[in-house]
Image 1 (cartoon, rainbow, N blue to C red):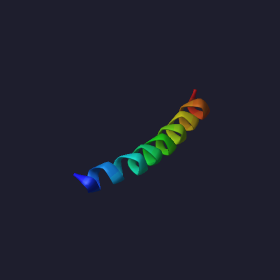
Image 2 (image 1 turned 135 degrees about the vertical axis):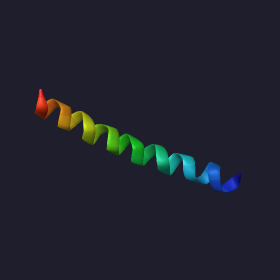
Image 3 (image 1 turned 180 degrees about the horizontal axis):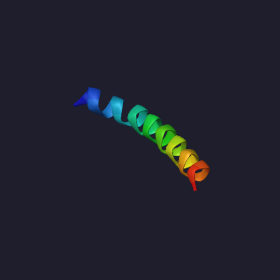
Image 4 (image 1 turned 90 degrees about the vertical axis):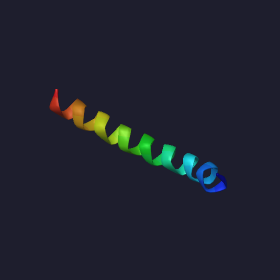
Length: 30
């Protein structure tokens, strides 16, 4: 449980980074 609470902020940061990368790819595609 503690590990999960520690992990979530890191995962969210990585997900946001991935999301912005995907958005950039869409901008280039369209």
